[in-house]
Length: 253
Image (cartoon, rainbow, N blue to C red; front, side, top):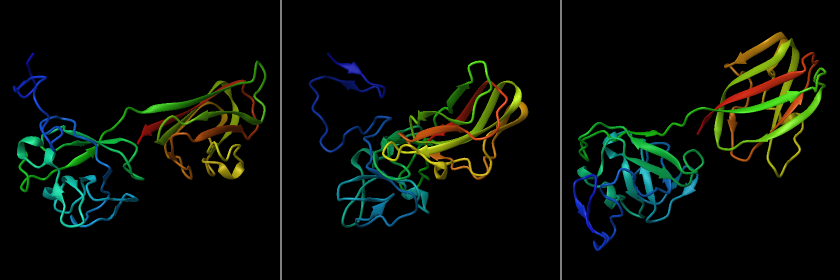
């Protein structure tokens, strides 16, 4: 039975696949192995985002000095060519998306969206790609003294669910009081963490005769977290509160 796709084209189950052209008119393209991090020469095999690119790899080129050169390419030992599903004016449109498989900065199935206004003319239009953004999330840790002031020492651990950056800390208590918290980051292989693994530097989350405080400057903090990192929470200063919550607002990479 035939159906009509979003382009108004009749599509039937008996239609044969288009060889070498995986999805020319779709808004989500076949994933690229890597994405550039700077302007490159569109020729020859090279290392991009810490990945040695092989002939035939799909590469999202997004940082050219001449933005009309940006796009999805097939890597080659000689001059690169635009990928078959992204080499025509009808194959590029505002909000088109593509995922990146590998790379230190852009890998891990990070998504990019085409933000250039329609219509897009290859060779003339500036082709602009922007990383897809995710809603902010929070990594939260609750400490309970069981009716007594929280004691100093190790209180527990949380696993980081995805690559992210810490953008704010919020420290809350049940009553006005004083408490200082250290946060230490480690991997599973290096567990347990020690004092040298602290990510808060000289500005740990601190309540000083307060019930709440927020820190967006995060001076001296190590802000980048990776999926699978373990965050250990230590009370490192005098405590006079019996219940406290430390919330780390994070932006997913």
